[in-house]
Length: 363
Ligand SMILES: Nc1nc2c(ncn2[C@@H]2O[C@H](COP(=O)(O)OP(=O)(O)O)[C@@H](O)[C@H]2O)c(=O)[nH]1
Ligand SMILES: [Mg+2]
Image (tube, rainbow, N blue to C red; front, side):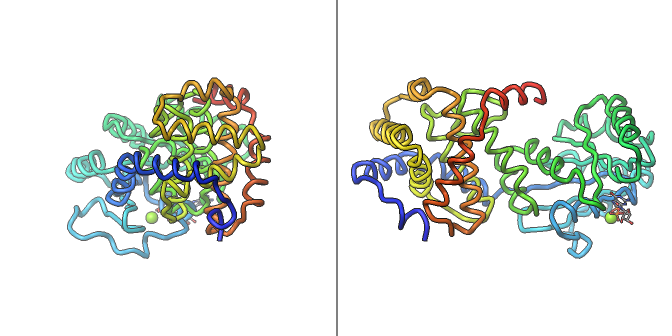
């Protein structure tokens, strides 16, 4: 079922696709190989009872207390494999960290963690131990997010805003995220931030295990759309390939990967071809031009973007990404008509200038 059966390419285009897929196989292999060997370690730092277990549960739908910690690490920091390549590192409560434990804790968390979550209880406010810890962690130079959990316990909203503002100012960071693990609030913002702050391979692995993948995938699609429109926000592999299609192939293969589906470059290209086909002459002729040019490995990148305009390039990428999300989420059970209709409404809804402006504001 799916793209292969319903979407037939002109023979000359199909030959060229095979050709391109072969030429870039090596670049993409690096990514796939990398992914299979990559491990993501997320360290939780925070006092007892702040909601560390509850947050992990809200994000991944799993209780790491049910998992046996990995043997042979240290007695203070415990590593729980939530999945083969996703590990939660749980540290002793800050109040329990005396001098000897402390050194060991930072020595482990600093180098090993890919992402550190410092979790603070909203209703208790910022403690001195939390401030000191933040300083130490920030020095490690690792991706670090500050989470203010139990936000439901602070009413009204203006009081909560003041608490968050106070913590952000005191820690000198703008990466403070308010959550309620109990009510599932702010978890979307948190997963989006975790996704964005992780490196390009680790973020894909992370998302495979996240329960609600939608917010972060939308973010990925938006960032790729901006990249296609010439606005670089985060590094995206292949964004500097001298043509537009590199970004979309990357986007489709990564989204498939997040849903646990391995696809080839040819599959991705066919999928892209099937979506843009709905744009009629513009989509088809653009796709054909890109494909042909790629066949010659002519450097046409800037040319193609100039030809269709940054806004159209961005909207197309957005449409392709959203269509890919629905397609792979469905286990590839949508047909071409359904894919095209999802593509078209996403394509029409994307407002490049507004999104660009928003991105400028929020960073
Ligand atoms: N009101 C409220 N309670 C929460 C929240 N998150 C966790 N809790 C509760 O706080 C207690 C400690 O949570 P837990 O996840 O075990 O904390 P940990 O010791 O840091 O792992 C439990 O009773 C949770 O139900 C939240 O966002 N709001
Ligand atoms: Mg716990």
